[in-house]
Amino acid sequence: MKVNGTHYRSLWWDEDKGALQIIDQRWLPHEFRIQQVDTLKDFADAIVEMRVRGAPLIGATAAYGMALAARLDPSDENLQKAWEYLDKTRPTAINLRWALNLCRGHLMPLAVEDRAEAALRLAHEISDEDVDINYNIGQHGLEIIRRIAAGKSSGEPVRILTHCNAGWIATVDWGTATSPMYQAHDNGIPIHVWVDETRPRNQGVLTAWELGSHGIPHTYVTDNAGGHLMQHGLVDIVITGTDRTTRSGDVCNKIGTYLKALAAQANKVPFYVALPSPTIDWSVSDGVAEIPIEERAEQEVTHIQGLTPEGTIGRVQVTPNGTPGGNPAFDVTPNHLVTGLITERGVCKASAEGLAELFPDLARLAKSA
Ligand code: MRU
Image 1 (cartoon, rainbow, N blue to C red):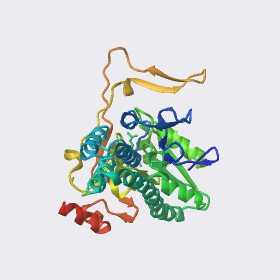
Image 2: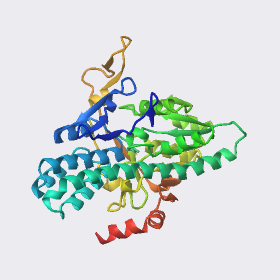
Image 3: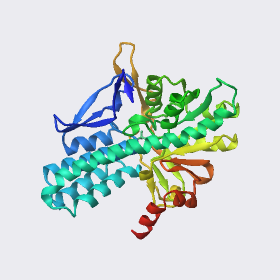
């Protein structure tokens, strides 16, 4: 997507420098900073500190991390060490382990001297594939938005609510939840997006920044506003992303998604989740019982970051001294609250049957593993 007229992916390989470039998301929307990632520690820190974030982007970053490890020392021992080091950076988004497993499984059978080049090629392929997948998610989601638009009088926008940032900077490009929005807008379908702020880290500001840069009308609302908006008939559809989807269609996404799904069901608002197939964890069935939920630092809750009147980025404390903060970063929305899953192969029911029908090859592969 474009930033100030220039097309960017959220990460890219600089051939001249022989290094990965990322957008350091901690400073958005106020500063657009590009950073070079050079060491394995840098890769791990970038994921842990959420300079890069969003399930698909974490996966792509980890693949470049494995490529760096293969360049420095392509031995079995070193690749395994890198796998373990990167795997423990964030526990919930399954794309991380998916990418690490893909890289390890691809590289280990190769001759040691061929691994560095193969690893970099694979990281490029994972990134390019993510862009294609997300474009296709947008194509399928676009049809859902088009159907809603057909029931409205001309010029009346389709009102979409989204939570967190499942946008282009959470992926390599296009985003998952945002891809249908971009494509609807580009196809002349009027839309308006309610953007949840998404405390504690306010990923909603990233979504607002993205949508604003693309000229899509949107309004930034508090996390607690969603129920009220739905109750008053102001939301036509909810679309969110997911960090891990079970084989039975439970979805684990940013904390607060579950409450939106409950409000959507109570108000008969369709609740869709957009996901690339690498976000499906075929080894897990019951999301509530089986998905590890990342617990992040309490300072993310007790403090808040923003632009000061002086124009610098600052952090202030919002709680009384000594009040502890609790910070579960994700929650699980059970499949019965999800109207449908928007994937690169089409839209399916959030159920074991729905996913197995769209992805028979992946379901079979997982069974035989
Ligand atoms: O903690 P984050 O910001 O990495 O969480 C991101 C989300 O929850 C997204 O909705 C999810 O990763 C899907 S991104 C296409």
